[in-house]
Amino acid sequence: MPELPEVETVCRGIAPHIIGEKVVATVVRQAKLRWPVAQPLYHLQGEKILQVQRRAKYLLIQLESGWIIIHLGMSGTLQIVSTGTSVQKHDHIDLLLSNQYTMRFNDARRFGFWLWSEDPLNHPLLKNLGVEPLDPAFDGAYLHRSLQGKKRAIKPWLMDNRVVVGIGNIYASEALYRAALAPQRLGNTLTESQAERLAIEISQVLREAIVHGGSTLRDFKGADGKAGYFAQQLRVYGRAEEPCYGCNTPIIRFIQGQRATFSCPKCQL
DNA sequence: ATCCGAACCTGACGGC
DNA sequence: TGCCGTCAGGTTCGGA
Image (cartoon, rainbow, N blue to C red):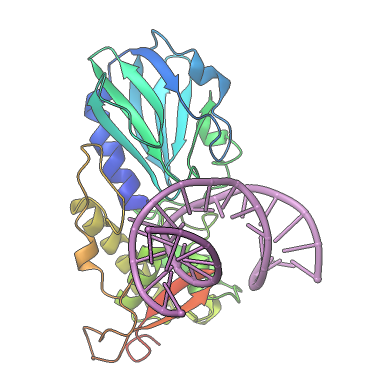
């Protein structure tokens, strides 16, 4: 479900409800997630929540003695509900807060996880992450430099979080369509101006999606339980066989790196 | 360095 | 109604 815009939407949604509050209790109904729920998470009573931030698709919640690292996997959601709200299927973790609200984690597929770290940016899962695509350091020059010698298709390369983080399967196809680049183009064949255009289109599509609250295809929800409405702005993702908005050629779907890719065979070269 | 398939899970949907 | 195969926004891991 969640790529960078969706995780950012969740981050902004939960922040005002949890920052400054104290943890009353942690309730874990299902500890078997992508990795087992970390032990320190069971003993957070009385700790104050200091801040919430996002790095790649990870949510980082700072308490007084360390940080909760949350990943939403494919189907995870975080919602702010009144404490005592009835439990639904796959509601795995509750963080009960001093303001009578609960931050509730639901994840049908259990690819998500909650870990604990005193130094999250140096956690094994985070320490080798590439640049944030909305950071000024991510520009055409960076892209072009990173692509030197990369004889790898551009789409799976864009989804490699050692290079640039947060771009998942939807926005990789969307950004390449907007940049008029074929997903199967080898990285080292991009010119400087093509890399420049691609960098701009990536940050543009991500920013637009954040403004719209993310893309809800199936089950994505923000912290308020509402769907994001960027899905209706998608130009190629999920549109196999439908006409390209630019030239009417049918959009094609094929597999790259075990993931579905969508593109216009005429507009993208 | 790259690529591939498998693995971790549940649910929705289409076909028979 | 039911069973089966396919697909889904992510990421790690082992092996070629």
